[in-house]
Length: 346
Ligand code: NAP
Ligand code: 3JM
Image (cartoon, rainbow, N blue to C red; front, side, top):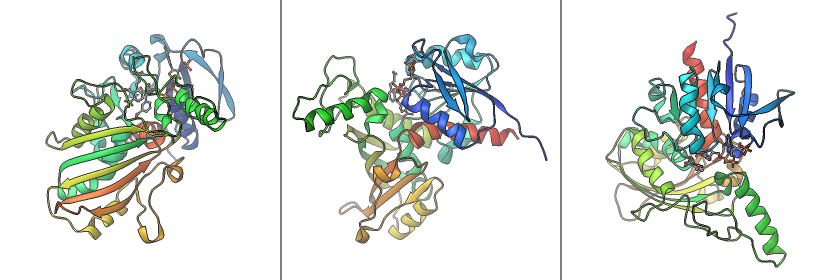
């Protein structure tokens, strides 16, 4: 039997909410690793993380860390990626970057394997992983785009706190306890922004994710607009988004309204979704079956339900799309791209 190639893999942001999931996936999926390098800030250097029964020591991420690295999986924030991803690529690594640093760079492919893996093969050393809310939406809409075309998308998101990192998870849990104990909730993290203004997330809904842009939409909302066009390779799709943080720990939910270009048959739409790779149709209203964040947690798929015709627009369609934001929305999409590159390398 042919001996399988193995690769030196670096995880940047190894102690973070996304980095931890990347490490688990590399182990669970038995990614062909020669050596695993775990990188984070100087604060974490010297700590250890278990991997395949051994303890791996975390090192501070520096340009020299990437010597000999084949795959560098980045999730330590945009500022770190801007500095270190080009350093890794220059040393011959293929970077798969989870931040927004390079997503709209025309030289950098923005990839969801079920939608546009072909783009990944044309990389110049860096491949960008889209925003979590974009990934699950385009994965579910791609089969409908291919069959009918899409004129416009209006989406409202219900996003889990884990999308804002380990500290936001902690904030929701702490505040929930405080409120239940009759105390005032202390807000230090959400919404994440440059202003020293934070709101209670426990028992609340915050209509701000990332900071505001000049047009009144937030960056998170504009990520959904711009990234969808780039991944679908169609600048004519009209996308409008409202992104809302809710007190859920894992799993983003989305109410999506789409106007298709061509007339559609509802049964055919459901059949297309049921067959789509990486998508699971969960749609049985009579039995109260539809996707739930709690069910999607820990799973790699994108779940779709509440599929129904609009009451007014003849080509309008409504869907409810749920996925684990740290898995398909981040860590799994990253590892999946790496797996596909390895397969193509054979
Ligand atoms: P997190 O839980 O706060 O973790 C942040 C990670 O970055 C930690 O490992 C931290 O290491 C590391 N880090 C911070 N400063 C660093 C430095 N100067 N040098 C090296 N490493 C440093 O955040 P997260 O939720 O995992 O998210 C991390 C990043 O991934 C985000 O900032 C975002 O850009 C991206 N992300 C993308 C998606 C997506 O939709 N694709 C979703 C979530 C996050 P220490 O523990 O040593 O501080
Ligand atoms: C998700 O520090 C940073 O730049 C991270 C901000 C961030 C992002 C981003 O813009 O890269 C936090 C959480 C994302 C994302 O996926 O877009």
